[in-house]
Length: 195
Image (tube, rainbow, N blue to C red):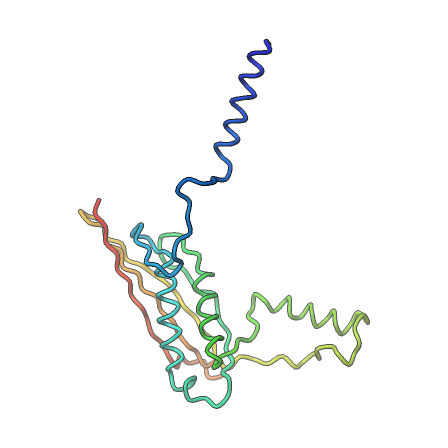
């Protein structure tokens, strides 16, 4: 292979690598994370913020929480996605948790997904001999949740001359001991777009 061909191939490979790397300059800019996103009729960041804020605020007004003299302990189940599109429901779950905790009226017990880590920490502190027994967290002192929060998002999609998507987000507050729903509400979002 000639020296010229080798140089040409290396030049093409170098340019290809540069084309797929990060972009510097140009039109890249920060957007307003609280700004309204109207790019598509799919579920987006504006919808997540709107749902988390609206539903959490409504729950905080419910008398069991609003009138409680003590912090209400809850467990928050991951939000379920019952739509036909991919939605990262962890973001919704985390935002709801943040609003409720930051109110100062609610705290969350460790959920099922964090229970193994919690028990591992307790076992490590109490059974390895690595920690001063005066400072270890004691086994059997975890506090159970009185209420459980569960939520889901679903949608109905109609296609014609206009694509019409209706999302509904439901949130329930369940009394764990009695096994009854004590509060429920929903938030609807409708989006349409032409072909």
